[in-house]
Image (cartoon, rainbow over all chains, first blue to last red; front, top):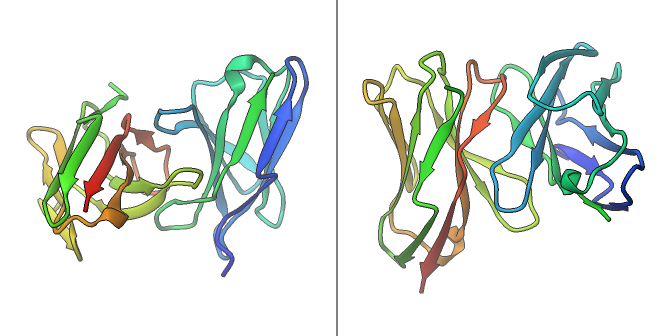
Length: 110
Length: 112
């Protein structure tokens, strides 16, 4: 079992650009959550997807959007990047049990 | 009311000692309290979790103590080892697949 996988590992963008991050959940998991972790901080909940619908959303602007595909994989899109969007973006998957996190995508905005 | 407060921010323990990290929450609707371990450059890994219907849960060297009336819970790491050196996060949620609210993290260093 590969666990939760995320791509890419690292990404460098400039202000104003758009970025797409990808997540494949652990086998058997149908729910995907996205978190933003700034350096030295705890992860902050962005949103959660279940059955291809956004089920919950945290306190993030509309620049952050997502999608879940029929195979349960998910994408996180961020538009009009700001310097403050630089962070580790974590994907977590779950079914009826605990959330398991992927290794994250390190996004740097210059 | 959504916050989870974690202390201490950093902790240094000698090998073989006990590491204790504390968390407090406000929202009484929370019913799931996990602890995660994170190494540099990696995602958080679930260590152990507890629900408010029990006051203690032990898995190997890791124990969660839970005080529902005080709205506090803590992680005890017995016989701490240098390999335990990492950042530890407490979290809380309503339901075990819901939105996790994380504490600020504790950086643990176990000295040989």
